[in-house]
Length: 274
Image (cartoon, rainbow, N blue to C red):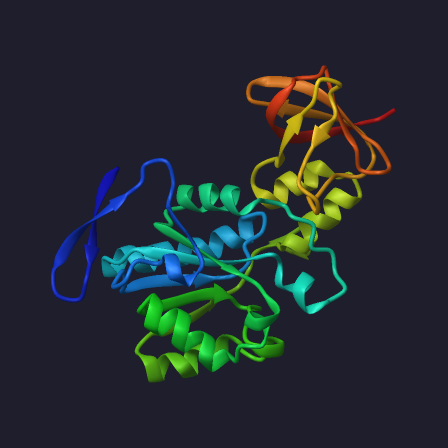
């Protein structure tokens, strides 16, 4: 554990920050009482791509300037799956992997809100009151400029600014970066993977797309349903320090060549012509 300075509104106290990763809270009930104040950044953050890094970096800098910890609030499963929006929501990073990646960017704690039909019906005002004000005691809130929240996505950055004036926090909307004339978004990364362009996905993410799975003795991977998988084809990939070949079949089955039974972290490097 590393001891970091934390501001509690009156004096500097010590916050034990896990060296292996941030505090990970699954639901509001796991947030310790009186944990705030803090700086909060909100979003799904699936993939933790370069655009997300820009938003998160803004929040971390704001927290350090104030002497406050930074909390990232994410949602699982993807809200679009729950409300029935017809779009690709294949998972780029598990919640646990997301927490690892944002810790590397300086985030102190991750709050995962289970996205349920009940949460989808919560108004923007009620969400701010319960999550940002009463639970986290937010002093600054940082989101992407296209962020929406609350029932039917009625809350926007302007909503956050207005509610912040009433609740004592400042809200900032950060423009996402672009890559090759496309907004740097999780949707763009998924589009790259669907076309088999794993190099473009790497460029948008800032690192190779990774799948965490279990390899059986035949070389086939067992992975969570809904995982983002590249298009069918033959790929060069990496597991740890080893370079391997991976064949993705049209039905989404992934064969590791040679087989490496056990847990694998598979990073896709490039597609091979056949």
